[in-house]
Image 1 (tube, rainbow, N blue to C red):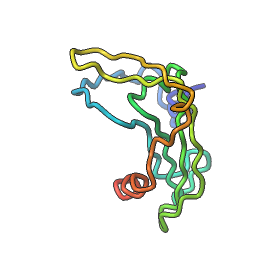
Image 2 (image 1 turned 180 degrees about the vertical axis):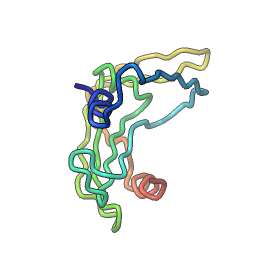
Image 3 (image 1 turned 120 degrees about the vertical axis):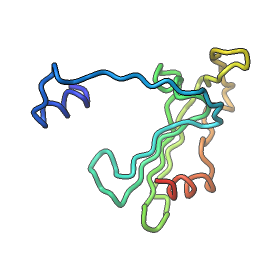
Length: 127
């Protein structure tokens, strides 16, 4: 069961009442992409901010070409609780002429931290 099915079942929302929406946005050219949860998604602890991030567009993580790095931070103190570097075999980048391209990383590039020690607190402040 996916998150939508769990949400609708838990809240008694009939399947036929669920609508689909599409958002079209201008493509940004990111160095890093990812997700940030202002509560630990594993247990709901609002004191923990959980961030998953990797280089390039998020597509590499969705397709399985990369494992995002993850960092958990104490939201009150800013202390990094743990940082796990993901292994990224490929990076997906937008092409200037349109579309995207997938580029293989060398063995040396595969285990680089996506977020610096300066970027994590900046993200924490935005959350």
